[in-house]
Amino acid sequence: MSRPLKILTGTANRPLAEEVAEYLGVPLSDMLVTKFSDGEVRVQINESIRGADVYVIQPLSYPANQHIMELLLIVDALKRSSAGRITAVIPYFAYARQDRQDRPRTPVSARVLADLITVVGTQRVVTIDLHSPQIQGFFNIPVDHLSALPVLYEYLRKNIILENPVVVSPDAGGVERARQLANRLGCGIAIIYKRRPEPNKAEVLDVVGEIEGKEAIIVDDLIDTAGTMVAAANMLINKGAKRVIACATHGVLSGPAVDRLTDSPIEQVIITNTIPVEDKMFSKLKVVSVAPLLGEAIRRIHEEESVSSLFT
Image 1: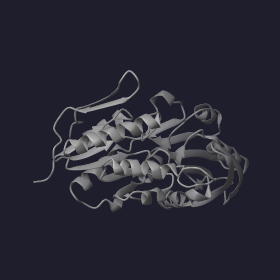
Image 2 (image 1 turned 90 degrees about the vertical axis):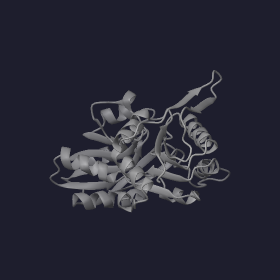
Image 3 (image 1 turned 120 degrees about the horizontal axis):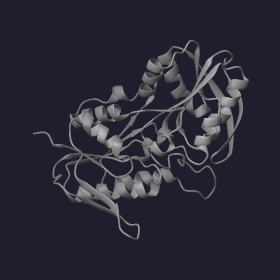
Image 4 (image 1 turned 135 degrees about the horizontal axis):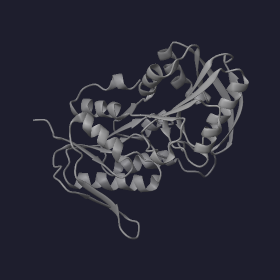
């Protein structure tokens, strides 16, 4: 007899969890996640999950440290309640930009977080578009690293008329992502060369590739302060691009991001709902759902089917 399927969520993105549960045809499990008066996180599971195949949907978005603590305590509660298998579904993985020692005497924060998630009792991780794919190697448990490119591509195909597109990678590290989207659109790619003198600041220097007269689609894994995205868009327009559209999986949108994007020449900003952005909506912003992607991954894992076709 197969294990019962259970979906739980913390406070990070309940609407996404509800969409996933609806896709799977199961209700969200009853669980209390709140805080004590001193700020400590309190978790209590209000139904039996003994022997169940449990999936905890919890993006580690702002406030990241609170959501990390929620995830760790939920997993510990599940382990102590005799769950059959515990999978952490982490649509947005925090600290992913701190994946190496780029300067002396600094931590590898992504590795620390991976160790915490593993040690507490997680048996599998499902995530989407890690900033650094090598973070998968920080875990000693299975990691299903999904891509949101098919979701973004479907929105572009159905909602935007593209006559002469070119996909633009905002840096050398995103070339493979740009290539995959360009293959789907049947167009070429361009690469922006930039340097980053300090965190959250980037200097766009030049672009390699044919831009003039084309519709430039900038694709990235996340938009944080939008400095890189807006500087890239301005340069592409100056180089003769006809239109600029921005696509990204994770809409962090911190600090001046909304104002920068609103005032930029970018025609549309397309992101997914891995991170809730209800309080940051503006006219150019379009949000597409990754719930079917996550729901299908969970269904296949639960039924012991292959998920490899969802990776690209």
